[in-house]
Image (cartoon, rainbow, N blue to C red; front, side, top):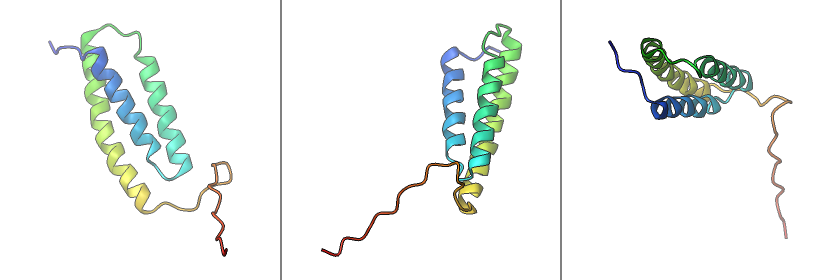
Length: 96
């Protein structure tokens, strides 16, 4: 029987997945992966079965590796910012 991951390790995995989700340059991908991560961890929040927790942890660890690689590719080929995103104001040039 596999040992259940600790609450601390699940929280670290959750924060790593959210941090990686924030690193997508595309707004749609970023929002999708943030929402998907929150929903997945919300569903498992009250689970006490060690086998299910262990399976969940292993699956999400593999998914984190894929998410990191996908975020890097998305950063390389990121497009224009959308209207719904916060636009960084362009700094004016001071001629004085």
